[in-house]
Length: 150
Image (cartoon, rainbow, N blue to C red; front, top):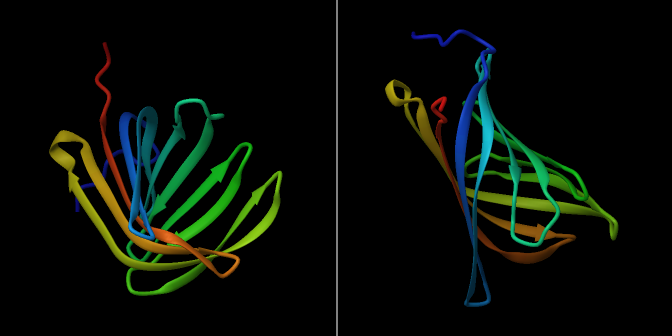
């Protein structure tokens, strides 16, 4: 077992990409952001801001454990989601438009890590329903790597 000095925050560069397939249309969104990576106990944390062109920034935290990836967003939109491969989970979305129930049906969670180079990636593949309505199949990819001090 190699343990990084626990709780030490590593500055990272994050490349985020989401592809949403809905009724034969694919919507792709991508951005790069700076963030932090740290480990507490058995759980890894990736924290960054979603920075889409022309949208308010949203702070995001990904909490990664063996069984589950938990995602929280805060800002103009508050969202809580959890992903467990092969399972259905529930989530919530709160915005100016009200509060919505999410059903998440996760097909795949893939985690890769290169501890030597202090980088890794997470891929999520899931179907999302909001208030019982299917909004599409999502493919999310997050790459992170240590940001070297200039």
